[in-house]
Length: 584
Ligand SMILES: Nc1ncnc2c1ncn2[C@@H]1O[C@H](COP(=O)(O)OP(=O)(O)OP(=O)(O)O)[C@@H](O)[C@H]1O
Ligand SMILES: [Mg+2]
Image (tube, rainbow, N blue to C red; front, top):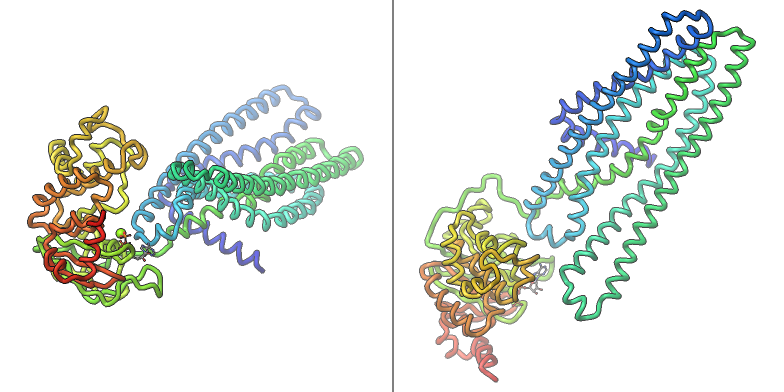
């Protein structure tokens, strides 16, 4: 029952795959299929001609017929060769294009997902899916097409030859054949489970590798080599064991079939011997029969095994569709409109938000951020500062309430128009592999070199950049590892400066800068933020006190707000924070 259910699920997956990927490649597959039919036809013909060969050589002995037969055999094999070439050529082309197309689709879908998706899915898992699953999709289609077109048609043709030439003998084979198929199918169930587990273990390998590469400093400085090695060895041996189990099962099927086939052939020879020697049948029909039988063995074997071979691929296809069908964690409304330009006011209207159910981060939160002014957010770690920026950028949707840009609800706006308005420097700097120039220019793709340099100057990055070996053309390494923390930060500030957006969000943008760089940046910021809505998060109050308004957060609540002087006079949390920082 279970198997029946599963196999219809497999059929459903294959049907969907064919619907989504097979159709666009109709031409390629069409040519491949026609070629396969030709191959199947030629295979059948080569069995049929055996009877003429034997009869002409032993009975009529006419030399002119011999020429003819030789020419026919040559023709059969030439045509078969050409068709085989066309079949595999077109099959591969279509297959490769399916891989490329699936990879693009998978990536597009992943890109579309909101931040939450990335928190709940490991990058290693995504990488394995991207590489394996697209390949799996192609393998499944290849297998379906070759098995059900070439092999099946060849088999039918050869079986016809057998039945026509020797009906009695065919019966023997038809009894043994299904027995073999039954044996093979029993093994199927176990392979499916193992394959699924193997995928998970491969994901583990990728994950450990990634963590080692990214966290190499932590790994080395904490002496975590042994722990990492243990994890890696475990993942590696898991994969090894599973691969071995699959190999055992697969290895088992071949000999079973082989032995059964051998027995069938022995039986056939025995019976046919009697038929020719005592029954007076022509040797030609027996030869054609035996040839057909031998030729039928390979396609029959492949068809019997097709479900096993499909199992491995189907697991990948299923995982691919799971990924494609995952609902978007944060989607644009179907009637979303671009945000209209405005002075740049941002308002939290009765917003409640939690990352995980029950752990509220912001509750019934109201706050208006004045347009064109600089607002600073301060407060203890974990008080919800970065979360506010996440909500403003609509990385998450609040569970209750609205966030308004100039009185327009951002959840009704197109994501592109929203993000267009914002330049953001994150708490953890992130640089892409590439040059300094490339990394800054990501802020605004069509910026000229001069604009990039101006932004770098504003971010106080120009001097150190020109000091680098290749200046703006210096490669920064994976995630900027070839630069210092402060240098990375200045590049990400320059990137945001270049964007020249209406709203500037700086999350601890200066935390890695020394006092001098920070002072220089503050000056630059004063000019840059003039007339621009700016929100700065900083622990260092020196950055904060030039803000027009300072909002003090604690446990997701606004506890104080006002200008630096007023807050100091009030003697609340701000004053306390200020005094801590002044202490030596
Ligand atoms: N992705 C996340 N999933 C679950 N909880 C989160 C997530 N990000 C933050 N939090 C939780 O939300 C709360 C507010 O975090 P937030 O990052 O806004 O603090 P913060 O004020 O920026 O702190 P810091 O000054 O340390 O950067 C914290 O309790 C934190 O543990
Ligand atoms: Mg933060």
